Image 1 (cartoon, helix red, strand yellow):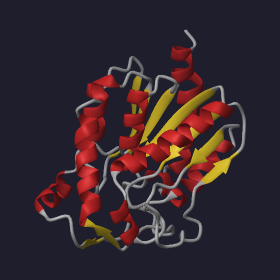
Image 2 (cartoon, one colour; image 1 turned 30 degrees about the horizontal axis):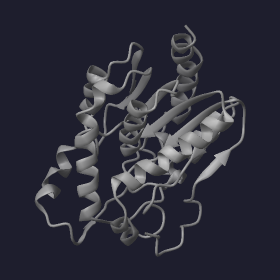
Image 3 (cartoon, rainbow, N blue to C red; image 1 turned 90 degrees about the vertical axis):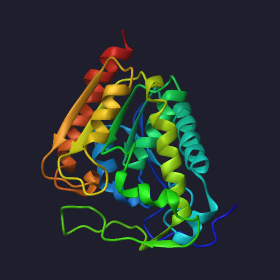
Image 4 (cartoon, helix red, strand yellow; image 1 turned 135 degrees about the vertical axis):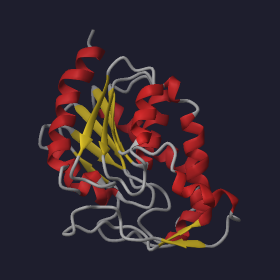
Amino acid sequence: MEQTYPVIKNADSFFIDGGKSGILICHGFLGTPQSVWDFAHGLSAHGYTVSCPRLPGHGTHYKDLELYTYSDWYQTIERAFLNLKKRCDRVYVVGQSMGGTLTLDLARQHAGIEGIILLNPAIRIPGFESYRDKPAVGYVQEGRPDIKRMDVEEITYDYAPVSAYHQLLDYMDLVRGRLHEVDCPVSCFQSLEDHVVPPENSDYILEHVRSKVKEKHVLADSYHIASMDFERDQIVEQAVSFMKTGAETLTST
């Protein structure tokens, strides 16, 4: 299937050419690469090649989301990862919210990932559970993105199809049951105040992956979309430190 609406300005995939270490970034549910644009450029300033694909159905019109499943989202991320592997000697993956779900799924299926970085990853969202019992028709009105900073705007949808929520719920169920298959180094960033994904998601993930290297960073001044919030630069610095020390130390031994 093909999208029926044009891509919103500044919402499309982007690629930043850099060194031989690459970073794949997975944006979240209803979001777009715009949500990680500044974050990605912060990473690229340290010499990394950065790729951020736009997930199918995102960044156009909410009706496009009805055309795709979580398999389409995953296949997009997997293609971007394989292309990055051809260009770079090392590849790390960053995922925010549902992008964290995608990152965990990719990590369990591909041994060639040096390490993953999760920003408020989604593995179970109690607030979305009521959608399971709703028919996969119609739309849900969305509120303002969960960002503490008031001077930034995320490109997202005002509405979302119920069918897309079904896909998200099914995908989180799938990945949650296979966390034990993830064994690469993991660095997790957890906002203490997140109005979308309960912070306990991060703890659950760290408890259930088999990774030998696991670390958690607490964010005290950011809400859910941490890549656009007050601690963005701090996340960049700690992520780079993880990639240069924690992940690389393990994978080089």
